Image 1 (cartoon, rainbow, N blue to C red):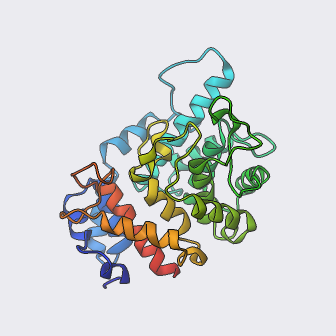
Image 2: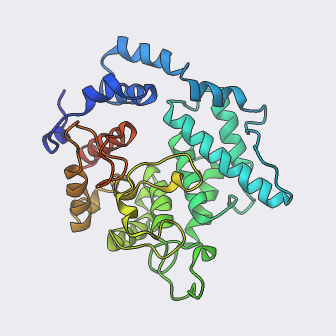
Length: 314
């Protein structure tokens, strides 16, 4: 069955993803785009369970749902923060390996994230970590959970006048919180959590975040999170400390795709046209546009999932 999105790209990358991508990407591609092929889907579902990085992560998880930290920190607060960051890294990797919340290990991992929450709804670290934790919890199917909703209420109260979010400690020396613009990538990650949530995507908070993002497309960020001018070209997401928050223009579109009211906005269209134009002769998309000559399978899967979502919502 042809999707509308195949009309706007030169080459359909699905055959390349199914034949050559790493196992988790093959599995997620077939699950999303070829679920009618029960035999292939069943085989890949079986195989992905024995994918080494997934097996290793599940095998090293502790009874309490956490993973051992490689380094111990003297200050308890720092120890907790690093443990929480590692939890986000590992749970994100397991999500990308096709794990779901009906697995006991995933349930334990999600409970371990929620146990880090303070009574007011705040998670450890900075606002972009709060956004990523909420996005992960929603992606694993916990939207509506009272603790998750409390986390959204906490972050809603910290939205600024311009519609964005800003962690004061991320400002350059000499910048004032009162006059500084909100952080682009912090706001992007938080808005993505709201837009992934079927009820909260219709709130004023999400609309204001959306409008802020549309107004700053391609501008340079002024906080310590990706201040480089080419941050918009970094399409990949990885499991390193900051790599979790990468994604550039692709993530910008992913965050806004569930909000059909912005699809006709000039900056949404501009971003989408640019992204489509980055497809390589192999049919894949690069990890870093304009720099990588090789295609990236995970980025390509996210691009076609995005195009599919725009079709579905539009």
